Length: 444
Image (tube, rainbow, N blue to C red; front, side):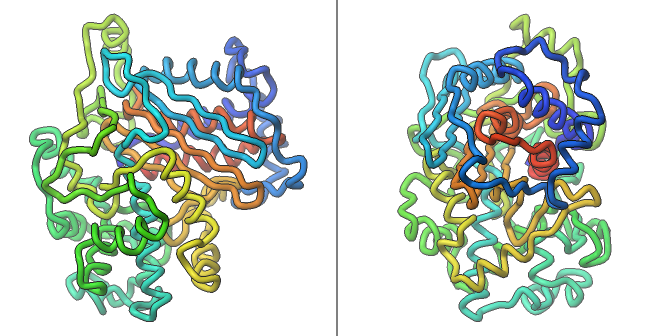
């Protein structure tokens, strides 16, 4: 939920993927600038408007080159100044796992697939799923006006529940306010109430008229969490437990109380070189060359964010999980394991391009990034990527415990992008763009 710049990173994603597709994966001397515009155009022309590829499942995947994949993870983790990182890729042919670095700076404690991590905006997929379960039960409709449940929302009679779910309500995101970001820097232990967050968002003018354009807003998902509590008559943590975690036996996945800043053991610490205000807005994402040099010289160390209070994210980002359980969850999300067939179809039909390029798409609490369905999450100190490709039975989960990277980017999403050519026979430049565009959104 940190702020990052999408336009620059989209260029890097496209170029980086095509270079990796044309090289051994160990040849870091190939320059991204050597990729021609014609190569990008040729690759892009072969994809659909949403960036999804539809290769024959028998030839869509390639065998893992674990040595090359290990080299990519090591190179990129060092480039992003990561402290620890976990990569999990599953296909019908096997599993690739890389547990790089450490869970704590200055120690040699390696992470595992069962290390707990803050998952940030991946929590939005939980909120979207419980709302859709309530749709399935007849408690609410995606066509209901928000005013039916929240009369305080300006123009709420013209904003639907579906528009909260697919980020097309036009409501301003409270995470873009100077007030919130200054408070996070000055008092990271502050406990935020969901109603405070909604009030911050609603105190700003809408970004657009309802239903007219995509605008990723955490105000939407906090409102949905409050509506879920209203409909089920219980706290959101209990709703997640009863409806999601217990159903999938996710024993290492949790949603802490607003006053609880701990992470159950075993967990990874979180680290960040960036403050919240300095990453708010365009052009302020990358650290200065002088500061990066000081980091590399060891004279500047990251601040520890592990026990910063995450209540400012609430139902939009307060969750905790592991790589193993994110893999279980994202597959269930993509195939509709917790919804009936009609409601899952409603969800999948809701996925539409989030901008004119058509490279990324978003629907009812779910993102599409090429052939993968899932989400990306980021908050100070933690970045995670999860995606499942139902056509080819491919699962991707990556997390990093230093975020954002010194260039302002989302390290887990970028590592996932770098590994696409080592999983797919015909990696898609547009799928790569889609991952980057969504990582920009999830950082807001």
